[in-house]
Length: 290
Image (cartoon, rainbow, N blue to C red; front, top):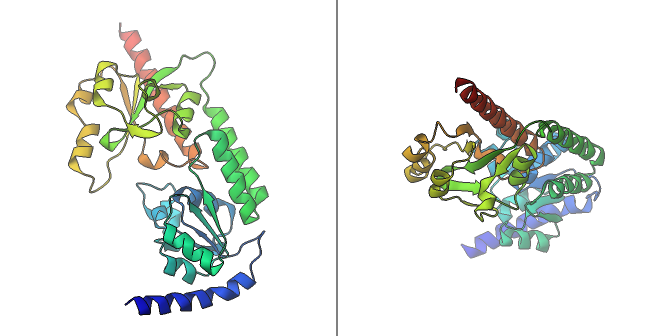
């Protein structure tokens, strides 16, 4: 079995060699993305005939904002054999990707670039520019950055309005805390993130007891995916949260908006603004009824 795998890999290595010889470092023509968040950037910056494959997550509507488009594009499951067989001249991956695949790409001589998960809006915009530069699509990258910045500016809380308290509560109790792009977007749109107050950093669970003891004005509830464990779904639909419906407004904030930044931020701030405006109307109606 091992001998057959070794022979297969050797064949794939030889098949990849012509691509390497023809590689244009500034304008790669066969691009593979193994990074779900980079997928959403690449798909907007280059013509789709240059995309040899996206990550398999790109087709998942629960995780990806580009799932509809990705249905018509090739995908990869990140194995060394299939990535090499695609004969890419550039692979965009993450620091959490399979080390075996990265080692294989290194042995063959296929160029790859690693990407971190950005913690701030500024880091995310810098990442868009980095991807654009690698693809030889600097002009398209600047157009994307301008579009994101315009959406963020339009989503800012008007100066004559008061911020509201808010928390993200996904299946399993997962929340976005301090040091996250979503947390920064919440503050920008006038939603003060209570998870950060309770020491939640990055993406960690927020105890249900916190919400019950001090309910925020807005609860941004995640959608449960088909086949999700019942215990995770029950947390989002817990009877304790239903009992607080008169004290806080609930709005849907899908998980696909939680983990990636880049152009996903446009959809994220739109969802946050809708939640803010819904809560403002609820509070106004409650005040008028008094």
